[in-house]
Image 1 (cartoon, helix red, strand yellow):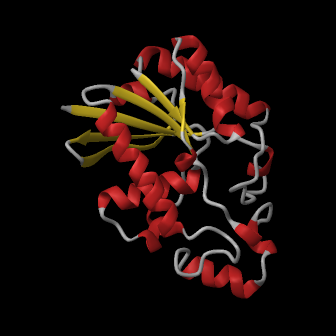
Image 2 (cartoon, rainbow, N blue to C red):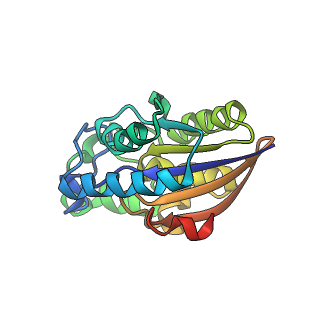
Amino acid sequence: MRTTIVLARHGRTEWHHGNRYTGSTDLPIDEVGVQQAQQLKLWATDYAPDALWASPMLRARQTITPTAEALGLTPTLDARLREVDFGSAEGKMLGELPPAVAKAFELDPVRDHFPGGEDPAEAADRVHEVFQEIGRAHQGQKVLVVAHNTLIRLLTCRVLGLRLNDYRRLLPALGPAALVRFRWQDGTVGLEAYNVPAVRMETLA
């Protein structure tokens, strides 16, 4: 049976202004992020997902709450959906890091991930694990998942068989509250849409 899994990045936080690495820092969404959460709610009301899942991080919970209240659904919070921990880069922009660290990261963000941070390959393993569980638990249904930028890009590479080392080059952008839609069927995954604003996703339904 075909399952549709839509992943939404959480709404904007104050660190988006300078593109600072947020990772494990538990920031709330800002006033624009609140508006984006409302837009997601309007889209989800029409899309009518059967189930909601989310990262337990504050910015993800704040993003999914309006949707959950509107639909009368309780999100399943799963720690495997949390963002990658960026270690020494937390709260910093790439240009604020030691040049050697920044250059190595840009060349290979998996092999040379930020010192003290989570190995992106391990993050890809955990999110892929919960993604497959969601597919099996909701066969024939539609599921909305609110998670995080780097984690969603790593998942996209993993399920499509792309090199994780290339996630920044192949998937350079995923906007706040933007949507990524997958088709899941018996463990086989197809990508139907990527980086689509929630207000326009209905055109791809």
